[in-house]
Amino acid sequence: MNRPPGVDGAAFTGAADGDQRNDLTARSAVSSWLGISRDWATVRQVHGTNMVRALGPGELGEADGLWSEVPRLPLAVFTADCFGVVLHAGSAVGVAHAGWRGAAEGVVTALRAEMTAHGHPPIRAAIGPGIGPCCFEVGPDVAERFPDHVRETRWGATSVDLASVIRRELEGLDVWLLGTCTMHDESLYSHRRTGTAQRIATIAWVA
Image (tube, rainbow, N blue to C red; front, side, top):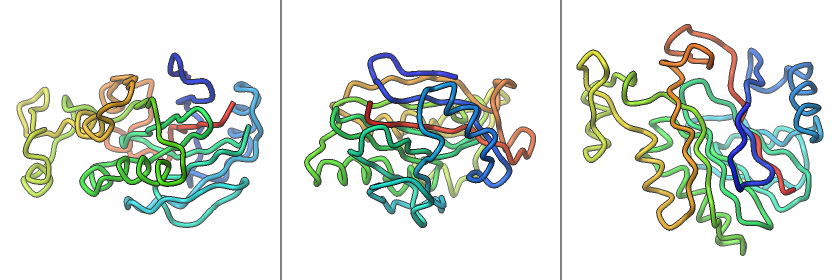
C-alpha cells in the first residue's frame, strides 16, 4: 500500500477482485487496514470523461471519475496499467481512472473542472502506479494522440509517457507521483504483463 504524503484520506493498494467491484472480502480487509468504511462509492469504468458526485456508497453508474465532500465516504477506482489519480481540495476529494483513452480525452481535467465548478478547486494531487514509458508499447494511432509525450520502451519500440500527460493536466497543483511502472514491477497488477483480472484500488475520502 502507498499513501501520498500530505494528502490525508488517500491510498493506492492492491485491493482486487475479478470484476473490479464486488470482492467484499478484499474490500473489507483493505478497509480495516485503512480504518475506513467497507461501503465504497464506485463507478462502472468505461474509459470516458463522465464524472459523478458521490452522496453515498454504492455503484453510481458509468463514469471514470467521482468526487465527494461527504466525510469518511471512500471513493474508489480500479486499475491494472491505467493510472489512478486523486485530487484533494481540503473539503472534498476526487478520484479518476486514467488510461490512454481517458488521458487523450482529458479525464483528469474533467474531474478538476467538476470539483472547481462546485466550489472545491483542488489544491494538490497524487498519481498512483501505472504503466510507464519503459513498457507502454503503442502503435502510431495512439502515439499521434500525444505528440509531446512520445518516448521509447526499454526495447526501442514507440511508447507514450502517460504520467507526464496526466501531470500536465494538474498544472498549478502540488503533485505527488509514485512513478512505479505496473508492467515493470512484478509486485503490482498488470493486465498487459499477465492478463490478470485483479486490480489496484485507488481510494480517497474526506478525512
